Every structure is written in C-alpha cells, then in structure tokens.
Amino acid sequence: MKRILLVILALVFAFSLLLGSCGEPEETTTPTTAPTSTAPTSTAPTSTAPTSTAPTTTAPTTTAPKYGGDLKYIYAYSPGENIGWPLDRNTQNIWGTNWVFAESIVQLMIDNTVVPHLATSWEFADDYSSITFELRQGVRFHDGTDFNADAVKFTLDANIEEGQTNALNWESVDIIDDYTVRLNFVQYENSFWQDITGTNCFFTSPTAFRDNGIDWVREHPIGTGPFKFVSWERDVNMLFERNDDYWQEGKPYLDSIEFITVKEKMTAQSVMVAGDGHVLALQAGRELYDLDNLGFNITAYAAGTDFLIPDTANPESQFSDIRIRQAIQYAIDKVAVAQALGYGYMTATSQLTPHLHPFYNPNLPLIEYNVEKAKELLTLAGHPNGITTTLYVEANYQIKALAIQAQLASAGIIAEIEMLENLKFWEYNMGGWENGILFAGFAWGPNWAKAYKSFFPPAGPFFASVQPPDVADLVNRAIATTDPDEQRALNYELSQVLYDDVTVIPYLSDAMGWATAPSVMDHHLLEGADWQYWFPADCWLDE
Picture (tube, helix red, strand yellow):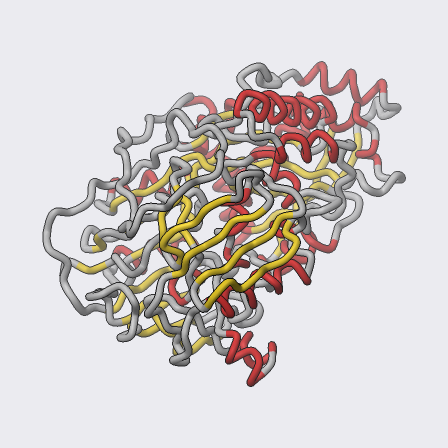
C-alpha cells in the first residue's frame, strides 16, 4: 500500500508541474506582543530588524479570556527521553513543550524588542564587559523553592561549564544580592539576546538538581512556567497541569495542556477535523492550504530553509568535488518544486537565509534549472555517465525528496531514497552519515552569523558530515561588531562564501506553521524571535 501511495504522489507531483503556480497565502497581519512588565533600563545593540517578518496569523480577540479547558496539542514527534534538563540537546522532538513548564530571563520578540520576564530590568556595563539583571521577586519553581540569583547563576554556570555554543564568550556569573546577578563576558556578542533566550537557558530548580541529581531532573521537569509536568509516555503523550502558584496573577487560563503524538499527517488532520485536537504543529504547503480551507486558523511564515547536505567531511566522498555539488544545484528545478508543492507557502532559493530574514542577501541570484549544465559538470568531474547516491529522508521531506529524486535522474544522478525515523534523522544529523545526501530544513534566528556558528561545524552540533569553508574569523567579526552596517555586510559576505562553496544546497524557503481550532485564543505562536515561541500562560479556549 505504501508503494502505491508513493506512486500516486509522484503522479500528482508530475501533473501539478503542468498546472503551474498555485495561489498565494492569505494577507498577513502584524502580531501583538506578549504581556510586558517594567521597562528595561537599557538594551544592547541588536541586529537590524526585518522589514517584513510578520507571520500569517489571526488578529487577537477582544473577548475576555475564559478559565478552564484542556488544550490538545497534536505533534508528530515524541522525545527519546524526558525533557527536564534544559542543556540536553534540543531537537525537534521536544520543541513547544519547553515553553509550557519553563521560562527565560527575558523574551526576545520577532522585531528584536526585548521584553522583561523573569528579569524586570537590566543594564550593560559602559564597555559591554558585563550585564547586570534585576530579577523578579515572588517567583517560585514548581517544587516550591524561590527563583532568585542562585537559580540564575546555577543555569548560566552550567551553560558555561558544558561549553554550550551560546555561552562560549561568557566568562562568569556573580551574585550581587538575592535578586541581582551579573553575567561577565569574555567578549560581548551582538547575538546576546538570542543566546540567553534559547531553551538551554530556561531555568530549572537548583534545589531539585542538588538534592536528586541530573538523572532525576531529566525525568521530572521543574521550572517556573505556567504549567507543571504530570506524566510522559514515549510516542503517546506528555501531560501538563495548571500551575496554581504561577507568578502572573490570574494566569494561566487553561486547566491542562496535553501534547499528543500523531506521526501520520493524514491521521493528525483527521484528529483536528473530528474536534479531538486544538493545535496541529509543523505543517507546510498543502497541509496548511487544506487546513485553512477547512476553517482552521493558520499561523505561518517562511522562517526557515530546506536544503540538501552532501557528506563532504569525508575526503573520499564524491561530494568533496565541488563540481558534483554544483551539478546537483543545476539539476534541481527549485521554482517548479515551490510552485507544485508550496501552495503559496514556499519560495525557491539558493541561499540559507530565507527571503524575510533580516540578513537575506539580495545580491545572490537563484541558481536556475539547467540539466545540460549539470551533465557538463559531472563530465568535468570524471563522471560522464552520471553518479549514484542515497538520499536520507525524514518523513516530513518525503514528497519533496520524490520530486527532487526525479529531477536528479534527468541529469544522470541516480538516487535511492532511504527513509529515516525522526530519531534516526537526528542521529545522522549529529553523528554523521556516509556516501549520501541528508535532507534537512532549519529555521534560523535573527542573527545569521551566530546561527551559523551555533549549528554548523566546528562549533555547532549539527551537520556532522559537512566540511564547511574556513569562515571562523568572518563569523566572529560578524558577531562581535556593534556597527549595524558592518554587521549586515559581514553577514552578506558569509552567505556569499557558503553560496560559492556550495557547502549545502538550499532549494526552498519553506513556511512551517500551525493550524489552530477557531476556539484557541491568544497563543502568540510565531511572535517571538525563536520560531518555537508561544505563550501558554495567555492561551485560552473559547468553548
């Protein structure tokens, strides 16, 4: 049956290419921001804000929030282990759950504004050698212990000691008093707000850790968030209940949030249509289009990029020859794929930063489809009869992989598709693969150079089989500068180097999004700089 389905999908794709472009997505509206508190005393220079990054979303309701209700969040993945220790590798399996039980020191919004949260104010030293935070008082962890300077130092010290990428230029943490803490820098980086609001800096109870150890904490998530952990069963669900002691008065509104694992896309849509789900995460293209037509609210924008990753770290790999990587570029009809599969939510691209990113480089042209050029490059590389390879594909990329497989074959690149379970995908991504091309899609934060450093070798944990060009000095200069014009120029240069090297092969800026039932109010999805962001404390059900 599965083979029949794949054949049908391939035929649908071929037919859709003849039909041409599909409709554009609905008109976007500017999102509202999460609730604010006392204004900060100062802010650091930030990256230039995007000119247009507002997600497609629904205007906030003016109706007074209602209490009660159990939110059902339908998600395709399940963590391989529990999620209590924030410094464990953050993968797609746990995104979305972090924001329910744990919180960051501030919130970084999509327009790069910094909103007070667990800190009420902050001030940088005149020379940017440190930042001092004044912490919110009266906040307690789920185990009843106080959130204070010791808790902040505990988590930030752990980031420093474990060599987390975000903390490589953090030197030490000083407790000034119970609710004042200073973070000292080796060197200030303009990605600071992005670095300190990542989920590895979400705070966990130091008392729970010291009393019970890391293994216990991993199995018992304890944060300061609006919901408390109840239970988790792998590949089934993860349940959180209302935190009645939450520091924001009158919140949260929901009684519980349950993350329910449904791996098959059609099954997940059926669950939503039957009214057994309120939120359906990480949908794209056709799914968003269909769910919109079924009356669900869509929150989506092209925050990330889909790309192919040849194994270039192995010098014996055929992909260590740039001419073969270039041949693959020319063999993919990116425009046709975007038109056939995107339903207005995908755009063809040849660079890693998507079109709405603040550091998208407008000077890099799209590598246009040219089968003859691809064959010529293969011949120059010593393969006049073409090459064979394997495409390693996680389920979310199956349809795109079928389309690209057919296009590559036209140029003499014969690729076998090997499907990967999600956990196996992350094993390959972080551990490496051989003799093939990994399909991936990632959303980058607003600071492109820091995102590159955080994701790619040698500092980043992903794309283990990639041998990137030596851009360390360029990246570090792009991160260190406080001049916005220089920052933009250096980020453009980084994209140019990767483009010329064909380090990876981007083909789509792809909008991943959420479908929510009309009853779901004030979720704030995609309003933060981190595309995982939402605000469960505000969310309520109009039922």
